[in-house]
Image (cartoon, rainbow, N blue to C red; front, side, top):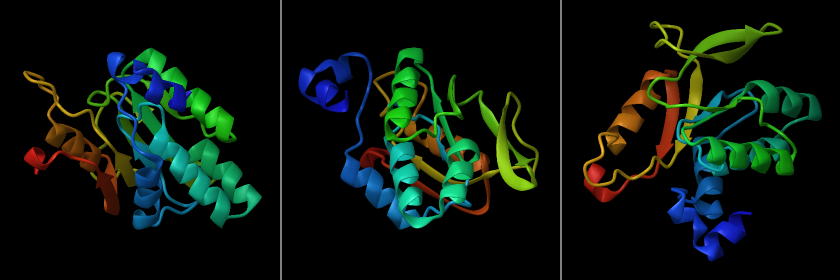
Length: 180
């Protein structure tokens, strides 16, 4: 469906900005995403960064590690319900990893450190995590480039993502030069 959106000119009309696959793969490799990382895309769109992280981990870990990763280590937030559904379907087509893709406003959706079967994980919550409760170790994102008059400037996406990250985490973001 991504090819259809790309060539059908429907993506921009419904607010989808597709990140080229070579960029998503580069980001995952540059950050060294592993099966132990908790990965977040706070404006996941169709899930391109999550797919790239899933594919990378699938190539570099055992089957049990992949099973855990896809169920407890990939997180995406998408504001538009119909786009969130596309991200879920995209992950299903790739072998799953859809469990933690949620519809919502990324600025009012938070992740807090938790454990699942004694291993690090995260839980969606409605309040910011307290210091030391940050869970995310890798953020991959292409925030929506702010439209004229929009209050959701790119730096807000970066700042919010950083607030969800544990010490030592890494963030990769595509930003227009003006946001720098």
